[in-house]
Length: 387
Image (cartoon, rainbow, N blue to C red; front, top):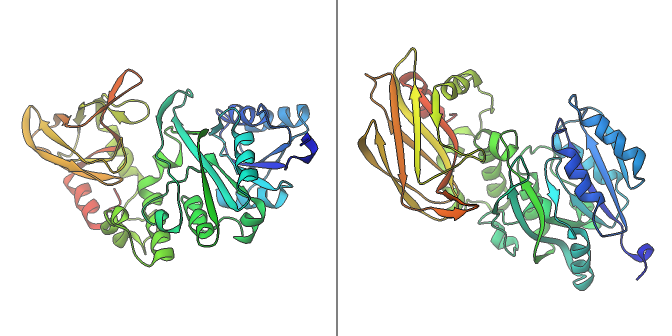
């Protein structure tokens, strides 16, 4: 088959102020060994160094084009890109993620072998800010039933037939976090997914990424509402989040009862800890917290097992004294570690029963949030689960 006969693949990249990463994203597309592709960046009017980079690629490569104007968010940008795309197959690559070499060719070959597939998806690595591999994400073959348990499709490693994407009406623009999960569920009701046992993409985890910054505030409520909308109930995996979900389902994310300033103040009380840049922690996780004003009552740890769904236990010491054993299971957990209000400074040590070796490091779990709270803040949190 000649290059002209190969199906055109359109890669859509929603973008907003990711100038630090977007050059690498674009290069990972344009250096693919697949000859018939176009790359469309839909930028929301970035104010950092993104636009000069976009103009540079638009002038040097006819396969690349972009628009830059205010939009209604990531979901709106994706749908704008879908309307502009001319290809038969759609790739969706966010502006901080990258493709593996050969990803597009492998996906197209899979579509040609299995013409009944609506989506081809493969394996995906998690990378850090410096593009260093952290771990492999948990990706498996899926169908409608399997997606009830969790989102086992890695969005940057998925390719969709444009006709199916259009049939679904694009992504749901009312969603800001799990529009991809919602799309997979909707597609799976009518079409087949084909799993490719190959690494196709890299999903970047960094402090500004949604998976880090918005998992608790936006992600959890959206995911659970989405699952309940499609299935009428929550699976056992997601049911662990139900108390949080019930409290927040009718409350705006930015509630006056939970100002962001409280979170910022809590974070500033952490004086030191041996958490890694990707928020993973070693088997002996040590944290020093201190309050200059009100006494601290509790240290809240919001985290995720390094291996999703793999239970483990941790012994916790505060100022050298054991305070209890804490268990974690499912996709995420929240621990409340009591602190002695008579002291201003606390040394907390969390000793994990489970850890893995990766990249010459020992890693136990991800500590997404470490929040030392006063009695008042702890009361607010228990009332609305906003912190």
